Length: 327
Image (cartoon, rainbow, N blue to C red; front, side, top):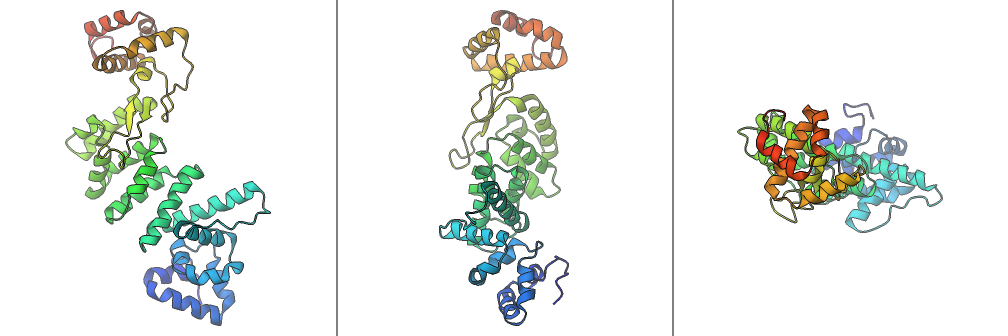
């Protein structure tokens, strides 16, 4: 049997071209050429959908499978039935961790772009959630690719969107915005809908304009975004991020999870912060925007301005207006 196929593994090719024949072919191969069978199933080029299709038959041959496959099968059982990962407890914890993460990433990298069954989608969903939230791997871009793939195929994505937003990582908005430039209308329109909580994006005429508007918005507000907890299951059409206007006013980046400043506030900055919070909402927004623009364009003037009493700052804002002279 020639394992050097276009997909790099005969089982991958068979699963793609004749999925109904894969189990029968595997059984026949085990009976006639067990060495070739084990070489193919333990091949680094094997893709997860082939392993998933053969999971029931492979359970009987767990002892001859490599650690990646054993962990993947145990993970499937864990998702669908409830079980541990069956890792060798004699292995050091870092080795166990690396084995598990490597196996889960293999499941996702080779298996995310498939919808074999409801069970299969559930395994992919929980694998992606574990990778993001349990093992804290940087899989944000790939999670968004998976969400858009599911959307185009009219498949389940509810839990994926919630898990993505619950990372409280504003970078996910950038990856979403990249889809605004997709040549597939179904993708660009969906991206615009996902970002419609941003008024500047919502009010644009087309997706390309929305992309450029988003770039400006994110450049101005990216360091001051705070996760609200308004995921799609909590608040339909909710606003997952809000702008921390007091942080933007002071130019202090915050932690997206809780809005706490990353940088230490000086005593005078703390006083300005507390006074700022007492201002009406519209005044907060206008003053923070004015401060950010002045800090960007005229940093020396901004340092003088920010040190003034708040009522003087508001007075200068009224005189010059946002976007006017000196702003």
